[in-house]
Length: 209
Length: 145
Image (cartoon, rainbow over all chains, first blue to last red; front, side, top):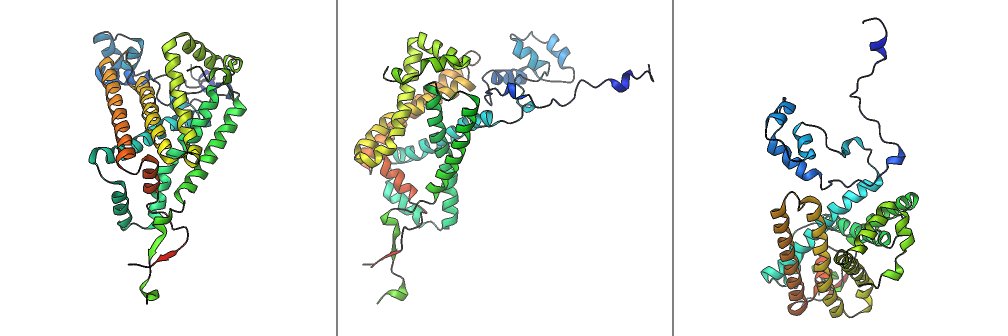
């Protein structure tokens, strides 16, 4: 009834969920394997305004996941409701950067293997390109970041594999250490002075006899 | 295979429920445990090649890397396939991806061996590629002939 105060006190059910308390700082992979088939089934069954009706009328989905997807229910874990945490973000980035690193390595190594190109010749061709040193350094930093992150976080994972460092403070401490070391070593690698051959320069005309 | 065992703190592993369950499961099934150990050994071996580069002669490091990196790649690809192309819902794609990753790793092994035997070697290749765009250590002028 209007005016009895009930409506004013009632809150809608669909409020934005608040970030979870610290107890729920769980390890959440970015794309759990359960999500992928569910997304596929969403394409297969289709989503419409009458999602529920269509889901009940069409052929009965085999799994609970497919049924939920067909009815347009949000997937669990619904990552968008979680506040980004150093644990989950670093875990997801580890997978993504590892794939980038592996792709870079496999493509560049197999380039020489498949085309039979000579390394020194290719390097000389690259050096003769008209690219400013700043661009090279930036590009090398972009290539180095996934590599250094894979190295330092890989060491962290090897530590975990021996059963050490599983407490929450330890996970955070090593996480920050990995982030710092990743950026520091990537910048160091990008700015590394090159070996002797590259430092040879032609004598400028002004200095020539 | 079992060289890592004395180093592994079993009690600490089992204190954490998830890690403990994982360890028990993998240790009860022989092949999974062996694969896990091979994966870790390849990772440790590759990491050791960074100091090894400065200690060992380059040819030895090149050969070890050519043996270990394709194995490490194969396990890494395998994790991705298990996670994103699950066998249960996509049996054919899962199998095809596994075969493809094996082919890619075999090709990488062949390419690395090619670099080691016919060219300047894997580590020298990476060093030379990285020297592109590097600033000179000090400006040394060389008389052009």
